[in-house]
Amino acid sequence: MGKGKRLKARQSGTESGFLSHAQEVLTRNFQKEIRNSELWPQMVAEFGEKEAAELLGQCKGELKPGVMPDEAGDCPTDIR
Image 1: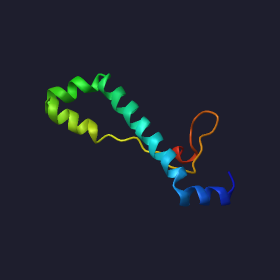
Image 2: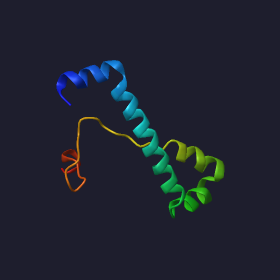
Image 3: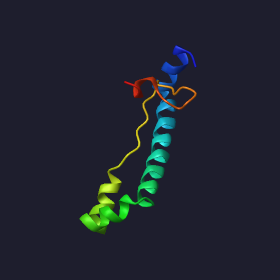
Image 4: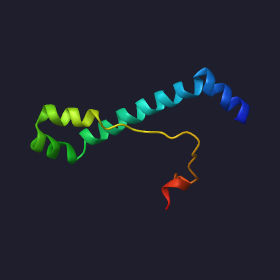
């Protein structure tokens, strides 16, 4: 996508709509993985079911536009 198309997409909200949806999906999957991991019972034991659920709700997946991964799935900004 060229610079002009990216600018138009940003202005029209198309690009942000996609990123928003992708982040929601990432967040749901991330929270699901935590619930199915060894960490979840530890969180419930330490904080209780209600507090653990609130903490889990604060875990959000975040996508940063413009940084594309390489073939291995690593982003240049991940390697420091």
